[in-house]
Length: 424
Image (cartoon, rainbow, N blue to C red; front, top):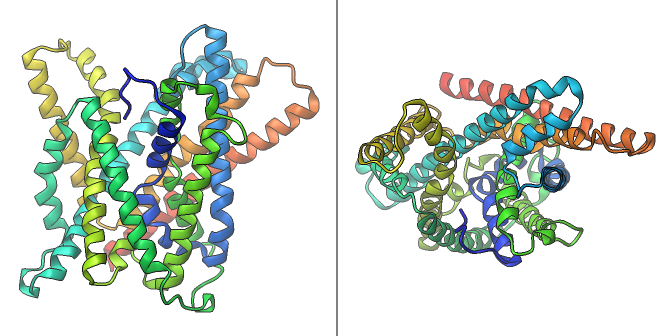
């Protein structure tokens, strides 16, 4: 998260965008390629990144237009949705308040989903690392480590300072950079022929690819807060703006990890590529590096739902901010939310399917379904001409339908595969 007292430079904003889009999703990208097929994934992933980036631009443009019309500062995602509905087509205007609530709901599902995935990721990687070093009689499953790390996650959630969270983000960035470099060293060695892996996957598993890919590019919720904190917010947009340059790098890294990861390990690829790395000291250290990075990132992801829910709890139960009793209740509240995310992770201990499920349910809505609706609402009262409006409706309609398709088929396929996993 950002320290609000200080405006960010273009380079700092670029780093934040990359951090928002490079997490556990990138390590699951080889599994996404397995579900799509090597060459289908190679074509689909850049196209999906272009669509997600375009939706980010839609949201930024809508924010600029609305803040100018309203004479206010830059808005948050839910406020953009609410105000867009207010000035949009007349039938949608009564639902402006609900638009903000629905966006908040999807943001909460997304962030809680991230927390679940992060806790499971840490447990799986530390479990494998520990089991590689100890005799078989001392091996423990990931769920044991999930329980072990629960108190640590709770303690981490008690950090409320934006300054300290920003420090954790920087540390996580450094660790992930080192980890990705080590992963790539392994992936580019002794590559088999592309003929040895599936080049065109099944239609039945393609929705799982969509869920994972959208999850990996789901940094749209951070774009507006970042724009608000920039020294030169106009630098965010443009063909060679901060956003496009950042997303080109994000897409390239995802593409490299996904393509080479699936090519190297084929259908044996696991929910996180780190779990496929050989039992050599360098690669074993990579699991600990990523586990530490994701552990630190948990607090950053956890910060968002707390800032949405806690003020509502205070209003609902007439709690006075800053009072000793309120602070004590808040700590119990934070601990309860952490226990909830870890329990949910324990209920679905299959990392790749959990990532696809989170991507399908919430990320599809945040990244692909809401932005085109907001775009039409914001532009509704502008004179664009028949051809221009035809293009806007076709483009936004196609993106919205893709989001709906990803939401429905991805959710169905993820739940179906989770049930199959439990029945095996």
